[in-house]
Image (cartoon, rainbow, N blue to C red; front, side):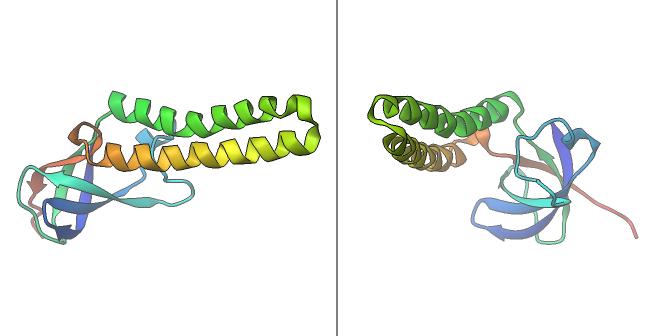
Length: 134
């Protein structure tokens, strides 16, 4: 999937690109748009760019969607594992185990997310600059 965005800042080999929500975003739910109309994504630079430049951003589709699914389902799955683990011990232990396992799942998701952000397969790439005549 490709999007147009505006570079907000450049830091080492990353460009922080602001993209605006489009009609393509409606069914995806892969990124954290929520109620926001724009999001800033750290992106690798294949071509040089500077803050204020309009750029073409190529975003991975399948790999990104699969990774997002894992990151959201892992805490949920561990929540239910904790819930059913405490079932025999009573409602308070059931709740305690569910919360503890959910916290563990969130912790693992954060660690996986950090690892995925370093993998070029899951990071958006700035492929081209767009020159706009005023």
